[in-house]
Length: 135
Image 1 (spheres, rainbow, N blue to C red):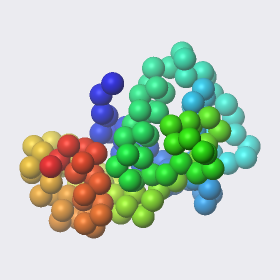
Image 2: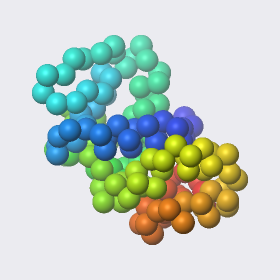
Image 3: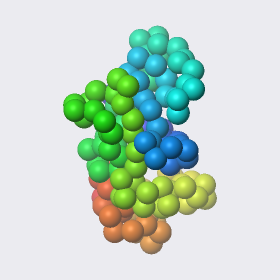
């Protein structure tokens, strides 16, 4: 499975936008939903993009941008919640601007690193550089 930088950005922004301190709830069999009055969507087995989403979440966790809350096993999304770490919040600040994101997407890895180091904290730069391949 391939890393999807746009999906990673979208997920970071979606997690940040969740309105609960418990974070955004993801379920391995259903699309993401927020809060208590959630509506379950189509099954993941029928949606390859949801398998890709889970893979991107694993990459984000390995990079230290998110944490899984309330689960003993870090790879098990079933019923689990995801929230940003401090590095994740820094990363969102660095990549939330659409113009900066456009420049990062179009830049070569070394150029992207130079752009991100000017707008992000050192923690965010380190995590994003590893996650996005901008080293």
